[in-house]
Image (cartoon, rainbow, N blue to C red):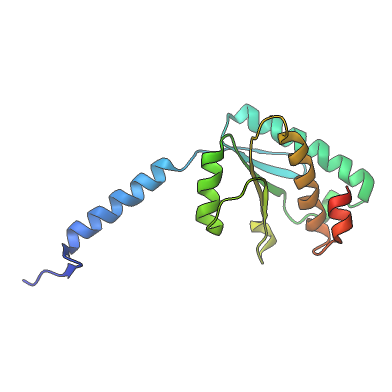
Length: 156
């Protein structure tokens, strides 16, 4: 019987190594609590209660945005996805995996399939809430207007 060798490792050993590596990567992945509101679906690395509070907060922002822009939530095909990490390390690891580089603040990831779009951030401390409202506005705006003018994105 012929043994297949890959880079000096027998095939069964290679499979074992790959499974162990995949298992350790999955073990390191943070668990997200989920909560959904009228506008938003929140994924948060904190507790389920904190995720619900964050969804309520984002929905309040959504109502404010709707009041100013007069877009109706019925125009949203899906709830807007927001993924918040409670620490910068998890946030950085996630972005490294998705876009291959870290960022200092929120990132709005846009895909050809709008259902995959998501706003990603981490809790930075005192400036977190103002960053969250600003970036959630941009996410809200772009869900109705694909290429909004920069003055509107930054002005609000």
